Image (cartoon, rainbow, N blue to C red; front, top):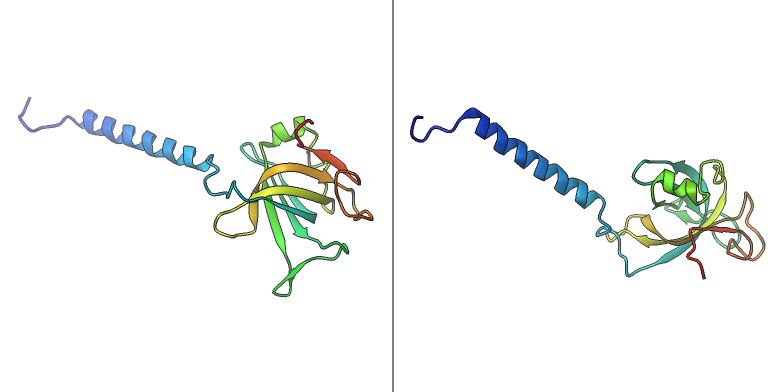
Length: 152
């Protein structure tokens, strides 16, 4: 062997190891809740505009509505928020599917907002389905069907 010479297979092995280490760190960071303010909680009512099933996380995108059932406006446009939940498969086992939450569903959700202030959060409590119209008294556990709430 030549002094100072490193075989090509060793260099490839080191790069492969570094690549795996980097990718696993990225994957771990993606599944972290560090981007959410877990000390803060918001409860909002809205009209579902999109249910996005995903293998890692499902998302519900909704236009926030006020107590009168009208959209909350932000700079002349409806205020849109989103919430990340568990995987679509895990959610389906709890009754939350595209069929049970079709577009236009009025829902109330408790979430932990993003730390950066963007209108998105991680599920932090009950998800309530109130059908397609806002019930008198608002969308809550008394007027809708509650999903994901811990057992009392």
